[in-house]
Image (spheres, rainbow, N blue to C red):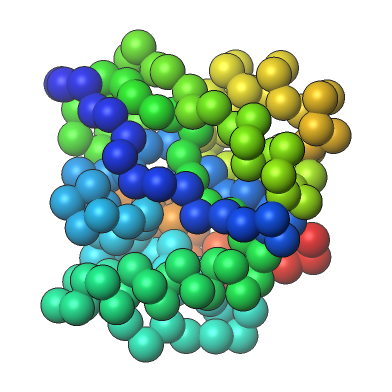
Length: 174
């Protein structure tokens, strides 16, 4: 277990309407420099499917910059912001269950300079950390509501891609 400091910048702009939050990027995502980039994570299959799209690049694409650029363009086109609840924590690999000494990100600028009014957390740990560290600071102040979605991690094998897509359609309604 070691301390991990979040180094991936959030994706958002003034037109963002929803914010999707994970907990902390996995080691593979940190290595590749963007969110949900582990080859087995289903996030980049699920979210585009919600909008009837397929990304042309894969999570393990050799042209990493193209893959990241395509994902950012997709998010902004659909007014979606993407970041993580935590700015740092002690964590064992990618195990959310091992998180200790959690320090949350500061969301003030994003909420004050965008149209975000709904936060979607990708998994129970992200949602729990949001509720504990962030909801008291931001939800009333910025009229934010939060929703817990199931994780797209391969560890959540009980949920198929189709089932995740159906649940993640709540994002599209915003």
